[in-house]
Image (cartoon, rainbow over all chains, first blue to last red; front, side, top):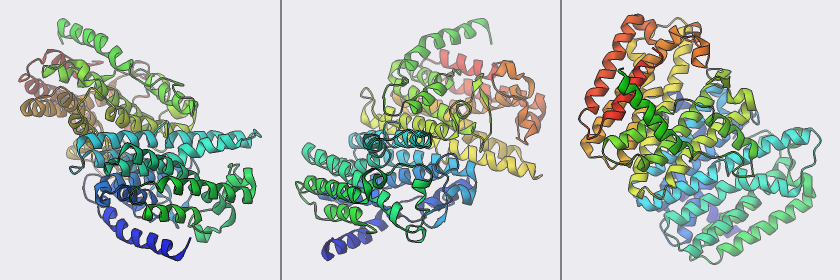
Length: 301
Length: 301
């Protein structure tokens, strides 16, 4: 990535992140279940790159709307992403004790409270978006439907279920195909990333063509993101990532480098990024979103 | 309850339950994560009395609308109720192995899949309601907001969190007050029952006064329901209830009979039921809903 694109991403993050973070729920905002709120806020404030809400707001800008039109969508996306991390980290799932350099939610608060914190964030995502007075009801229900389908049993939750089953099958010696791996990731990571761009299109009143281009770009960005995630897990240190790395292979997780080799994975990453760039090029104002897509594909490299 | 009211409830259940059950998602409806869908459908089809969706449809009828206008609300309510049972039964929460006379979801499918099945049902509740083409968008977002607030961290999830914390405190010797117990139940069970009636009001285009009466009736029905649940746990057998009973006291759970005595609890139950009946009496068509409220307060007695 050239210097000006990298500076563009930095400037966009500095401009957009405070906007939606200021809408996040606060600890002790309601006295009725203070420890629950504390656990929800703990995970929300654990940092992270806020990729989904920023993609969403940049998608609204890419079709010529104000980033602020997508604020409630952005908040809902980060709530759902955060809940999915809390539940995926649980002992019954991926069993991770470290996330973004901090103890995971169930390590800090206990397993029952962590399950409830995830449930609370997932529910609040829909409540927050349904309550946005600045988005006309017809666009609100459109966004809620797209978000729900991407996050649910045919999307992210379905992908996590397939991933759990796949790990068990791999440990049992069953081979996993590239198609099977792609299906898992299209659901587990891809669906919500694609929805991030589509929600920006909905909030930004995009034309049908622009919305379709953003969906297709989101699909490619999601794939590129996952390939790069696998490459980073195979090549980085725990310190640099803020979570346990190199454990994918140890527990029988299938990854792109494992299936395609490191060079093959890097080539697939480049191709997906190029597909995203092509789709975005047709939009009225694609500069910032294209820069972020490029940054995501090259992050940590 | 006199015979005709009991017959009324039976007839209403026979008339309404097939309507919304026919909208429930089916196993293998989507081939991508079949085991996840199987776990979701397993818990959905485990039976139960379908109280919340029936309350919702009868509330729509009580304000003069067709029961069918509340169909998507009814489905969403049962999805959310079912998810809450799956998660509450987990080892990290109430640790129950029997529910509605069948092994609980995590016993049948494993803990990770059960967490995901709950997540899937919770998400599908909002997706299903957001996608209802027969409900105008403005009423859809109203219903989604009310449902989300009732189910979330200020409602049901918050109540379960308070309940978990309360059990720990009681085991530690800390006294629990009647006010504390009522607060837990108002959130944990009451919020979703109250929302059941309010969603019927929204779907049925109720006047502001009728909606307020249904909210207040729902609040009283929720309280009566919980008191009767506690009484049944203290006096029934596992066989009759289809779940482990008598375990409340054993694990330090605070109940109405424990705080008020059995007679005191029965008196509180009668008062709450009478409050519900009074509120419903002002509605255009309250017969069936009043009969169900009475049945709920006297069930198993």
